[in-house]
Length: 411
Image (cartoon, rainbow, N blue to C red; front, side, top):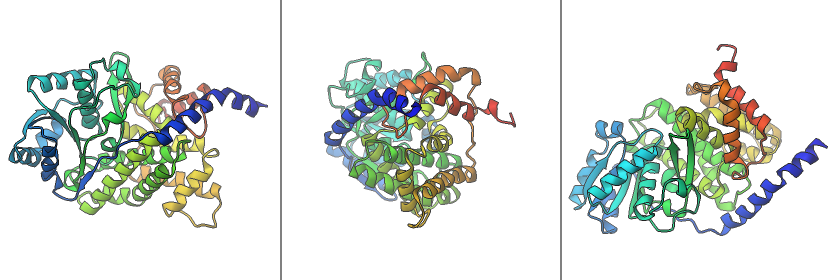
């Protein structure tokens, strides 16, 4: 009886998702061309020059700028007759203020295009700055799906981490400091005109960041695959990304100077981005966005910690797909049943987190905040995310308590 009641309660969510799945299957989404290989960032300005711009705003963050990681790219821009204005005030979780400051510099400098240089935060920030250039509306009114009416000025992305896949997606995430929340802007116009995978840009990443960004990409692939919007294209890209990450991330964590490994991880991040931008994500992201908005927890770290908990919650409903992921990644034999393979997949993720020093709880999470957080998480997730198992308020609170360090014996 309880199962029947829950099915009836979830029916409106599933109906909405069924409609969106039909839309997702026919909606044409661009795939940016990729220039890839060691040193290719120095050739990328040749691609930018094709767009006809002669002055660009380069959006990045201060650590990358101070490290000198942009130097060869900026020099190559100059060689190709393109002036660069650097905006390096992007925060780890970009804010409305970051957008407005970057936009003001764009106008003040008479720029004609935008280049994102960095991880997910600079790329997301650059996307929204570019959107504001041609779409004269507030950031709040861009929230959600397909709210942009005009295409962006020439926009390019140079990722320096392998995690967010933002260089491949229609999404940008922004933090509203006033309301302590993160939200997503999604529109095909946010896809860059071109991108580059240069493994030389990521060899200097610390192991901890390699780990969390890699698990971020794995989360994208897994949530896309086990969700309800899994087309043939989504399955192909998600399987490929999952196999690469499962079998190469720990090696990359230990051998960060290996260019071949770095290039593999860049491809996995891109493929996972292509998958989830067509299939959407799930409760891992809903919880991670709440952790980022409420406490400023880095998105990749939050995803890495949360992923095993949500897979355990979804295991029965997603068992067959989790088994397929496990088998494709080489975690079991064909004679194993789905339950065994699904279990092996979840245990592998837990093992990877353990070996790479990723904790099992969210350090900033406070038990007193759980009721409000659960409301925000479910408001984001239901019915937007086509998850295999729909979560109710009590179930959400229970998972948050598992993630809360105040509830652990050692606390």
